[in-house]
Image (cartoon, rainbow, N blue to C red; front, side, top):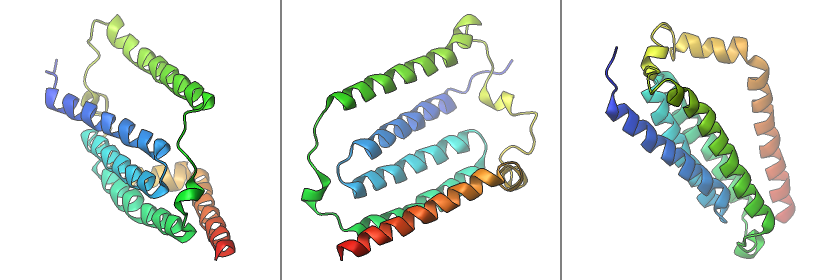
Length: 179
């Protein structure tokens, strides 16, 4: 029986709160540039969670690829659109936003309940996260990540890259129409 590592638990909850808080700011910010910067913060918090899972390669790729390259592309597109303050609209709370907030809270509550119920039912003796991955020596390695992306998930990887390309081309077309 291993003793629980409270430092990892505290760090996990701090990173998870950071992911949730910055992810919410992506949606709630009126200025798209502020939303993009909140997304960068979300990517860094996710990288911290990857480090806690001993997936150091995934953490480095998260920072380099998403927080670096993809966000530079997003910020470039946002700047290319050159949105004026009056084009962004007014911040207002509508009934649909309230329904969406209640739906998200209900979904998070349901997920938390399903995730915490086994812990409650067993009296809090499930083992730590590191113990779950102890049998997988390749977890988080370059070989495992390469296999997951380029062998097991090649179609979703290519579809995502095509969607990013289409989004950038669409933004350039919209921006060119404004110039």
